[in-house]
Length: 79
Image (cartoon, rainbow, N blue to C red):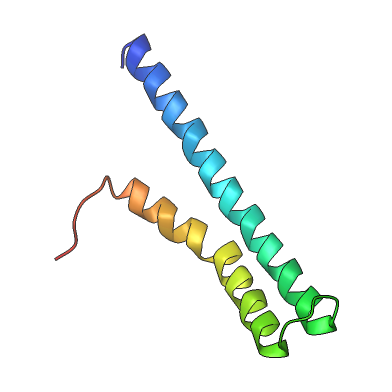
């Protein structure tokens, strides 16, 4: 691997890490907003808060893994 390819690979790795970190932070934000709604701090129905909290938990734990797997697969299409 020559230096330009290595620099490109390093830049891509940094960008992917940033995307995965942003996904995790947005998942935590969804959980916090959901809990605030459930506790009555934000005037929305309880069910909306519960759905947001569950969506945030799923986003935090599973979405980054799913995306990382798609990246490591090299963009191959499944049949």
